[in-house]
Length: 86
Image (cartoon, rainbow, N blue to C red; front, top):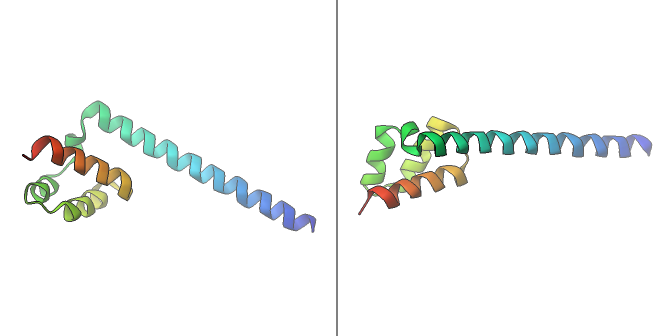
């Protein structure tokens, strides 16, 4: 019984550490983008996809290039699209 409680506690602790690390990495990346401007890390391929109205392809390519999650990549692509496409 005690080993079950111990395992449960260890699993929760590890999960919290992973979540904290992921949040820190995400925040560091977003801080970098806000300081340098999100366009600095965006390839010409991604910009071309956006200009051609292919936002899904742009998000996929941007995620591949940066390793960002779907939510973060979508936010950056949509922001770029709003500011540069009329």
